Length: 113
Image 1 (cartoon, rainbow, N blue to C red):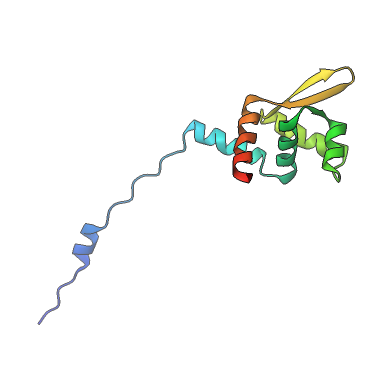
Image 2: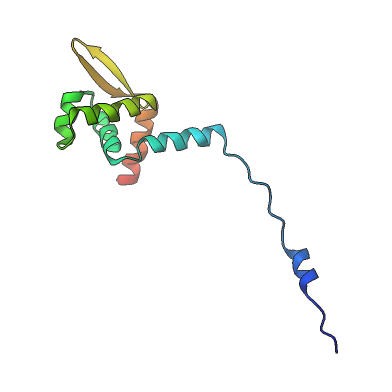
């Protein structure tokens, strides 16, 4: 007796893979926002600024082990990501959250609890 091959029936039942879809502009934007706070120090800065506006000196004191140049670098990245914005007051820049920064901080608060 000859055995029949089941290859043809298997391949007929296997669904074809659909073409991958590109992420929407909104999904890419959210991914970029999440990249901005993927660093623990930047996430901590975001959460500190969620409490109140601060200048670089206050942030350095609150973060403890971060130097002023390091904190300024993190602030620049958050500013370029449009999560924070500076407000000039005399010789100091005070940093606060943008609407997007506040929304992201709320999400983090929800996740962290």
